[in-house]
Length: 89
Image (cartoon, rainbow, N blue to C red; front, top):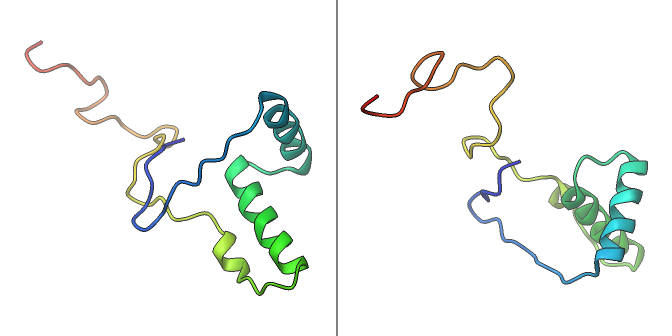
């Protein structure tokens, strides 16, 4: 997964113990989430909504990564043909 953020997207770092992260990751897998980020966005929206704070659920959707790189699709050709070479070789 690419770490490039889209325009207007901000990183929200939070400190957490390794034990908390391991427990969180296990729960995330059990619930069928594909990323820790999506689970955390959903959890924050749910918590705010439950506390009576209006929150647009659309805000919890993952930002678009179109044009931001990431892993190439399986079977996609690499730049420069089947075998990319370093310049001068």
